[in-house]
Image (tube, rainbow, N blue to C red; front, side, top):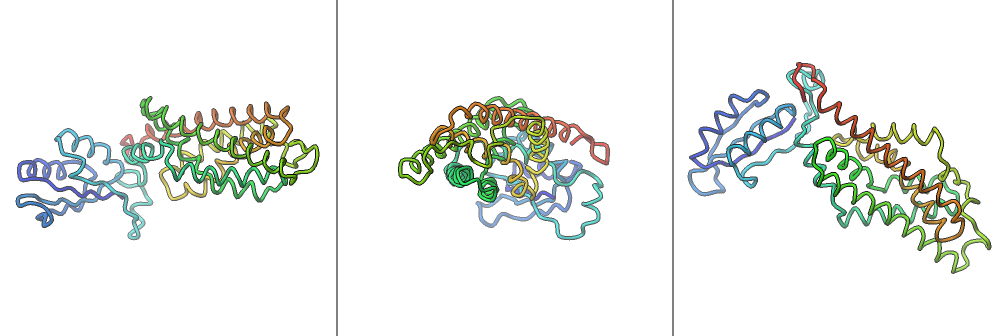
Length: 302
């Protein structure tokens, strides 16, 4: 369920009230004076079904209402659950405007994204060096690469080239940062004598990270579907671990190969990483396209 808060002046108040009354999927509308603003403004509060969110935002934009005058947020429904789980009068949980908002927010290489990617790179590089699957899983749990991947898919499906390009660039920056951090870390460890003489990355028990086969394709394709299904749900954090299995380990393996020896295996890691990224975006975009156009249980397109 979504919640609308809007503050309107007296000139727009009648038209806005009529909009909320007539638009399907808007319920429990409350209207009261705005005590925090100048006289003559009215606050509207309403519950919005996700399927109605796109039409509502489009109508608000058409009325010329400023983005500072309204707010649409998600509300966690505690009770009753039966109606929301049954899908009556709309599909619960999917609103295109919400997905677009998340994509815009996650399409830039913000400081937090870069910091988490760096931490993931250090953990993954050490995992490759000491052949520790636990460290690799830890790196996948930290990595935020799910976010730009899904933002890229949203941009492609929506036809927003700038959004897709910006999100894809953020993803590439993140993967390149993993490679560079892993390369520098492994080179420093080798220079400091912490690695065995003649260390080669293929000596790692995780050498399969640079091996491309049918399982690589299947895992990446399935991960792309899971990524998009979880993008606008509470499962995104958990699913992010599964998504990173196709990106972070291969990137770290490539960095260790460049920094500590075994550069001959770098080509395999590059191939694995490229195939994984392409399939993640392809299957994620296809999943979102199906979600966007699949009719809900009431027969109305999402």
